[in-house]
Length: 359
Image (cartoon, rainbow, N blue to C red; front, side, top):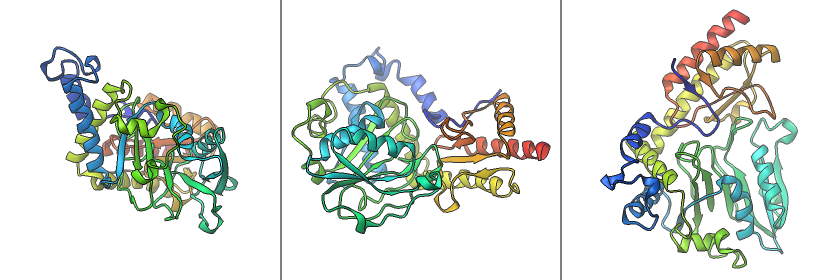
């Protein structure tokens, strides 16, 4: 039976990438060693490392005055690390609250400095991206933090406000799925395990002028300056994960780059939203229409009993990962870059059939 993987993360990898890795990573460049066995100081690995950074920079059209880092600890470490580096004692960090991940980011930053909410959609159950009034930004604000895509609630930013303060953006669930306007982003970070490879490596892209102002009172292991100075080789990097990110970047480039990924994402998302909107209320989307995500489609059925039945039957048919997050319930289809359109079409067929039997 075919497996249709709609997990929110880690997510599917392109089959082409898996096939290439299987054929090459366990005897890398005929060295007799797997990529995970190579010294991170070896010429073979350094070639992989530097090429991956080059590919990320090329795909995202990262300006020359930004550094690209490959770190560990996931996006969750960046919640704290960004504050440790960029939140002085006499300043504050502003957070735009769009769900659980922005809540966690603010909580982590609060351990290291002062924080405040600039805008929030919590009163609307995080169904929308809130309006941001930049006139409310405190003069002593060190940076504004955003979460670009909200996996749990199924909302996504289309653009970020262009403010005078630096903007730090958690792009974990939509990096490499669309182009980035670097005029409005001073630092982006993302765990790789949704659109950029496998778990273990975190991509950090930071404007050098912001990096110049990073605190000197941070331990080397948690200092962006130190990792930049060492080309992300200050300590042993997650070599296998970086190798896989490089392969994913190659796959993205061969499939139309970020424009191609954006088109794929929009087409897949629209198929599901059309089924939801045309179901006469049998399926209802959680997110407001204007804030809908192209990465995570969240929806409910008329009753909890029907949702349980839907999920059970879907699992029996080979659909994996359709459960909504435990904090909100319902259903969720995560359709990251590597999810084939054909699998989405199979899901639509299942949704139509289930509705016809249970309406």
